Length: 147
Length: 147
Image: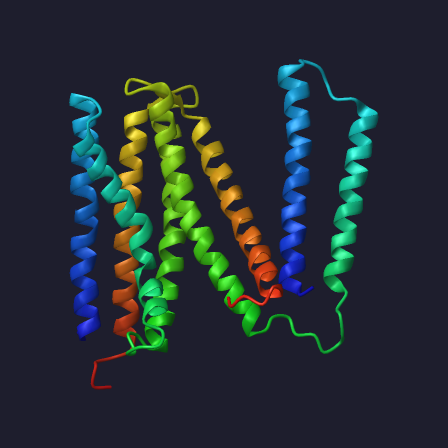
């Protein structure tokens, strides 16, 4: 396992947990105690983590364009692939959620708005998981650092 | 006008025309409780057909036989537009998931049949954002700004 793969593996475990734990706690706090600033901030953190963190490599490359090389062509290609893969899985996740909700409660059924917030937290977690899983697989295809 | 730009115009104009048609049908059927005028429907469908045929003609017609399908600048524009579209997907999904909670309150429920409509709506809007981002970037490029 090369260094990039180790980083991807660590982030693959850590980042979904960073989204799932505060997100679920925030939804539970709002559900049990009503709307407060802290749960809302926790929820906003999860959404920002899921929705904006994948842009980091592109932003870093733009900022450091004329300075030291931050990433090579292969890194950018891998970044592009995992961003696309994660977004495809995001769409599939929402399609599956629609079907599962329909199947569980029936066509005449209703879904609580609290479940919708949990669905979004799950989306952030799955998105981050797929991102780093795709990076892990792709960095593994290149062989060791010495190759 | 490049092929990418033509495709973007085709999609944006088709989307706006479809929205106008569906709004008319929705208002007529659900708000005014009557069937649409048959003559008006025929005229609208003919206009749709004419627009479609015009864009197919424009898409197939090249400025010169040597015109490439897409050059480096087109690819950069499409890459940026994909980033904008992906980002908008996240924002739209967050809004679509949290808006019901704000409107209906914590104890609110949403009919399950609305979920696929929400997803499909977000998908359509994200697609249009991609094409609008393409057109905006071509517009900026014409003024001499760096992409």
